[in-house]
Length: 402
Ligand code: AMP
Ligand code: MG
Picture (cartoon, helix red, strand yellow):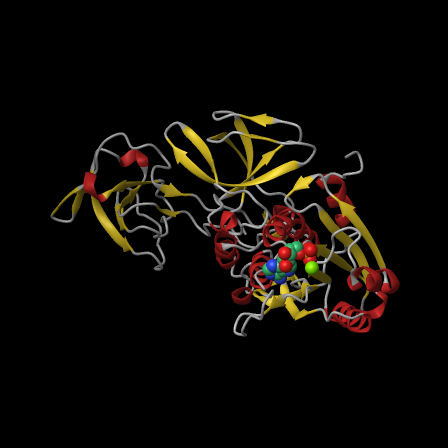
C-alpha cells in the first residue's frame, strides 16, 4: 500500500496559499464567533482607577488600630474626595479609593460606634485595593489578530468601550451532494434510495467552524448539469464542498467537470475511515481561485473528514489559528484493536474519572455506522501498523469544541 498518502501531506496541499477572506467592520454585538482581522490595543486602563475589592472602610495604613471618624461615603459610581488625615471613608465594592487612602479593611472586621470606626491593627498598604491598569493598561495588547470572539473576548472589548471591530468575512461555502440514490428528508424513499445525512451534518459542522452556507444543493447526475452547478457554486463561494463520488476509478461527472473547469487531485489517504479525498480549484469571481474539497459519501467518512480537513481550512480562510488543530488528549484505551497500513480514527467517548481519562470505543467502528459519531467526544488516533491493548495510552482528538 505504498501509494497511500498521509493526512499531513493532504492537509499541507489543502492549506497551501490559502488567502483569508476580506475583512469588514462589524458592531461588536454582531461579532460573536467572528475572527479579528487585526490586533486590538487597549485604549483605557482597566480598572480605570484604584477601587475597593470589598465593602468596608478605606484609610491610610498608618491609621490601622485606631478609632477613626468616617469622613465620607463612597458607593461604586460616585466620586471620592481626598481623605482628611486621620479619617476613614465608608466604601463599597468598586468604589473609588480616595486620594490619601492606601488600603481597605473589610466591614466584617470593623466595629462602628457613634460615628467612629474601630480599625483592626496591622493592615498592609494596598490591602483590598484593585489597582488601576491591573487587568490591562492603555497601550497594552488587548486581543491579537486571529482571535475568535468568544464570551470573554467580547467582554474585554466592551470593557474598553469598543463598539465596532474589524473581522474576517465569514467564508462562503457551497455544499453540494452527489448520488442518484440520495433523497432529502420530507420526500418518500423509492427502492434503493436513502436519505441525505451528510447535508445537515456538514451544514452544522461548517457553521460551527465559522462558515456561511451560500448554496446548498445537489449535483445533477449529468455532465452538463454538473459543470453548471460547480461553476455557479464557485461564483457564490470561497469554498466548494461536495460529498460522494470520489472513489478512485468511479464513473463520476464531478471529477471530469473539475478537471475541465479548473484542477483536481485525487488523494488516497492512509486512513480509516475516509480513504478517498478530492482536492481541487475552481475559477471564482474576478479571477479568484476557489477551493474545492470532495469528501467521500459515507457519512462517517464525511464526519471525520470535516474535522480533519474542513475545520483547518475554515481556520485558514478566517486567519484563525485556534481552528488549525484539534486539541489532543491522552487517554487509556478500554479496547483492543489492531491496524494495518491505514491510521484509524476511532470514535470514542471519554470518561474523566479519578483514575484519569478512559477512552471507550463505540462498539461498531464500521464506516457505515453513523451512530458511532453521535455520542463521540473524540477521535482516538490509532497509528498504522500498531496494536492497542486495554490500558494502552492513545491520543484522542477532542471534538467538543467549535
Ligand atoms: P460514494 O462515496 O458516493 O461511493 O458513497 C459511499 C456511500 O455513502 C454510499 O453507500 C452512498 O449511498 C452513501 N452516501 C453518499 N452520499 C450520502 C449522503 N449525502 N447521505 C448519506 N449517505 C450517503
Ligand atoms: Mg456515490
